[in-house]
Length: 378
Image (cartoon, rainbow, N blue to C red; front, side, top):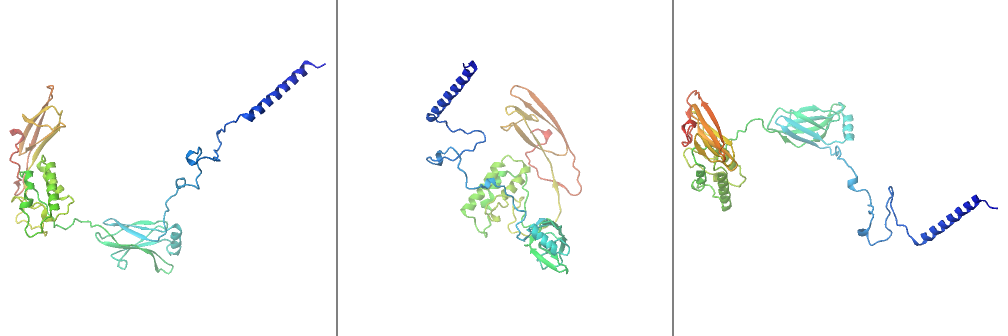
């Protein structure tokens, strides 16, 4: 007689056999889709219309340039010597030697290091400056006494018999001068402050030198445009800015002979350039003129009304303002008042004093006659 326990065991085995048969039947009809889990690598498609529709990346033929980190070599081994000037009294020398080349020359040297010779002029010139450099150095700063001259350099060493052996020679390098240039062929003149700026545009055609070659049409248009542009920019400039305007004028990059620039239109004004060059003649009598002006400037709300000394002053669109006064010797006082559109008032009272002490024959420099002293009203 079978027990209840044995019957339960047989039932469980029978159920397991049935489940296996069902799974085998399903596996013949159902297909499990491919899946990638973490750590799996995608494979290449066996077939397909092309890379455009491929779902996996195509492996490259080899490592790309981006994958390689390369550094520039410390030296290329050309055994060339370069010499440049750092300033009037210092030269910079650099030699292109690899570590193996450097060690080989150091071993051949009786001093166990290289030597740099610097000569004024050519390599064959005498005397020369000799500098013993560090065994591992590939560059050196070298001090020289003379400025404004050319130097040549030679890299080498002393052999065991103290004979000089040359490794490389450099091209010559010129140091800049350490003094002010003596070239005085160009002369600049100060235009009197009372001369209106628009008068600068007239003398171009009227004062042309007859024996010099005339300007072509392109040069005339360029010169005329330069002058008109600067006059438009400097229409409201003060007398202090006239000199800057002239310097800016001659700095334009146009192909014009010096004679094409404006020449004197008044007995008080010299030419902007000295067209014929040469030394400036020394004046027979030494002289000095000096004077001073006062410029008040500031800013307020652009819709406010402003007065200086009780007289209305026009504001710029951004609310800024400026006004010039003559400033003779003495004590002066001027009041500046601003009133907003709502009627708020702001005032400032400025006091000035000028005391001039003269030594020798000193005159007053010309000043614009329209300028008044601060306490004399506008």
